Each structure stands twice: as structure tokens, then as C-alpha cells.
Image (tube, rainbow, N blue to C red; front, side):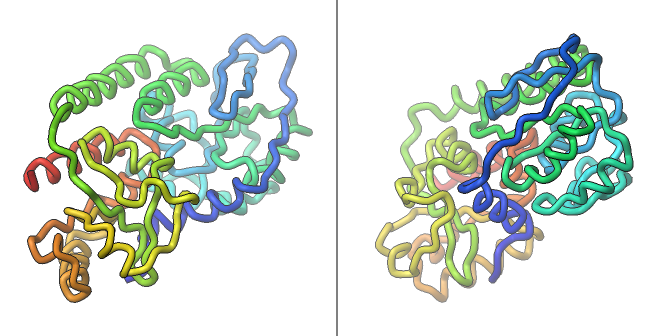
Length: 300
């Protein structure tokens, strides 16, 4: 088995982020809206955005969750949720957005993810005086706040605030329900041929923690390390969690781990969650967390 497509879209950004620098876009001094992005920059807008471009699928989902989907004029390949996003013009992919095509649609806001990937485009936006907002929620708790900030950028607070409150309520309910449950040792499978996993700095591991799960490779020194079969077996996970594109992928995963001799697989404890929901730091990750929590509780 190879990487899920959603995970493949994440890896280049993780790699690029290691050595990238952050260009700072100039914005009008008279800006009336001030919102801090996830890189600690204060982004200024003269008025709520009306013609925005997103450079990451999760950012597209956050904009729609904030009630501002009709303010998007373009996005990148892979922004396919909600279904309305599939109708947006595509200006390249997340690692190499086409600056000329972005400039041609005349945006008044650019929502990016990883600075290194967006840096060439940011330089163009700087010259055009188009504000750039970096969105990179690192924890589940940061997702409702991300929705609220989108509401501030687009002037849709009336829709964004209740949506964020509903997400917080769901997170609070999970935290309350699963607090004190027996810890379950889990291997997060980010790839099987070769075997990759994620460490505790990933937002996926944060979702696992909420459910009382323990990432068996949580202390790995890099975000997405390649590991050996021997090290997975030695870690003695009670369950395997993987992002999958189709329900049948989970059955194939289970069969593969049974052949590889993992005791948890022999007991049927190999779980699959929609890869896009699992790997994108957007509202659907809370759906994924609810599914993970239920799976781990059945195991208990």
C-alpha cells in the first residue's frame, strides 16, 4: 500500500516548511480589520474580503464553515470539500501555485498554509498590495478559533461564531466523555509500503490524545518518520489507525497487518478514517476524532 492522497498533499508542505522564510506582505495603513494569523503576523484589511484565493484544502473548508464560501474566487488542486468548492477555478497545486493565474483573478486576500510553498506568490501579492493570511491550526482546539478568524476576515461573524461554538461544544463533549478512560496504545499508519507514521507534534496525534490514545511513536524526532516493521511490532500497539480513501482500504489494511504478524490485527483492531478528514486541520477533523474515540472505546 502507498500513501493516502491526502497525506501526500501534506508531506511536501512539511518538508518545505523546514527551510522556508516568510515574506511579509504590505497592506494599506488605513486598514480597518486586523486579524492575527497562525504565523503570528497581524494581517490588515481595509474592508472584509470579497475575492479570496485559498492555497490549501483545509483553508477552503474553514472559509465555508465561516459562511464565506461565496467570497472564494479560486483555490488549488485538491480543494474538494464542501462539494461547492469543486466548482471553483484551480490555480495550480499547494506546493507550486501559479502566481500569474492568481494575479489574473484579482484577489483581495490570499489564504496560504506553508510559508515556503507560498513565498514566491507572496512576493507577487506584496507588489499588488494583497494581504496574505497564513492558516495552520496545530491542535483540535485551534480549529474553532480558525473558523472565527475567517469570519473576521470576511465579515461573516454572525455565521462563524455559532459554527465555532458548535465545534467547541463537540470537543468539550469528547474531552468530558473520554477523560480518565484506559489509555490505548495506537500506531498511526501514514504509509505501509514503506511504513511511515506521525509523531506527537501532528494534529492527528492531538486527536488521538483527546480519545485517550497513546501514539506509540509520539516521541519520534521528526513529524513523519519512516519506521521498520520490527519497530512497529516491538512497540506493541493495541490498534492501528490509518487515513483511507475508501472503506475497502481498511479491510485491505487489516489483512496486510495480519500477514505481517501484528497481534492487534489478529484481534481486528485496525481502523480507518477518511483521509481528507483526518489529515486536514479543518472542521471535519472533529468528525474524525469522534470516530476515533468510538473505535478506541469499542476496543476497551
